[in-house]
Length: 75
Image 1 (tube, rainbow, N blue to C red):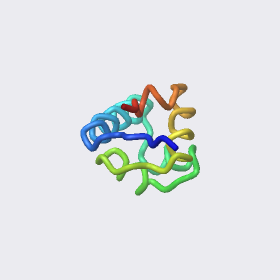
Image 2 (tube, rainbow, N blue to C red):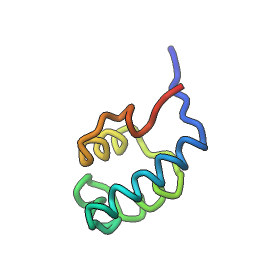
Image 3 (cartoon, rainbow, N blue to C red):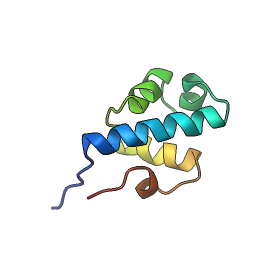
Image 4 (cartoon, rainbow, N blue to C red):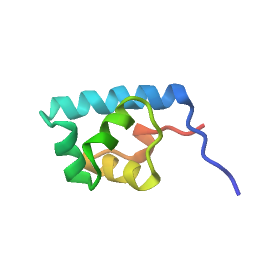
């Protein structure tokens, strides 16, 4: 079974990208969290570079009309 490797650096880059996309939509972390079914705290943690769950990755990608691989490239 292969594993997906997302580096800490990539998590930080993605977190900053998500922050900018959320801010450009004029959403608070709580508002985005409500849209995707998680808490504002979870959104803030992801924006700070913490690893999201696979479910949250897919929901965030959908919320921004992106592919998961666009937000979390794997190596």
